[in-house]
Length: 175
Image (cartoon, rainbow, N blue to C red; front, top):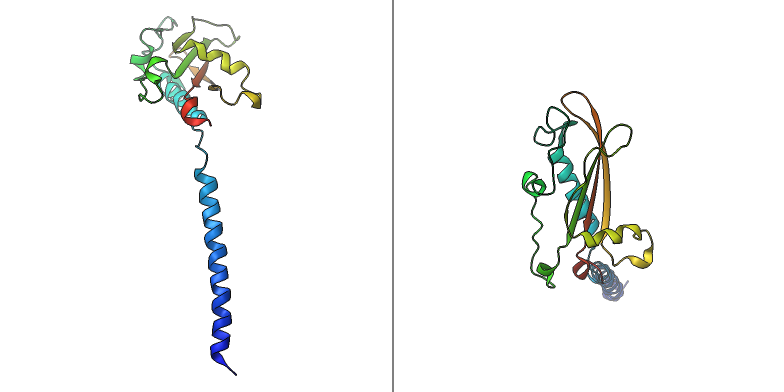
């Protein structure tokens, strides 16, 4: 039996397999990196979770949010400072000119009645994107996330808190 001929046949198959594997790896890498990853929804979720953690701890409203009489102390002016939020963005695509975030917080009692004025911060023009977000035709609009949770105050009064967080950043995340 001729061993040299068998080695040559195996080496041809070996190179064919190497080329197929390398081509598959190249195709996967190209498919992964060819489009930017849209992180707006994740960013809106993180923003909503940070606000929820700021307002409530272990199911109870924080003392700086509500007083002993049940009056909500959170307002538009002190909200960002109280929750240590900063809406500044990098100066990419001239984003400094127009805010890229919007937050709206609503406090309701158990009967679903609004008990204080809504607290909001950011670019109010982004709210219109939330109404038509479900349609795939409008993917290039801002991403909206609404979170709801129940919490108690010191007197065991129950509240429903709704948090709407919106992130724009379409120039960077959508192509």
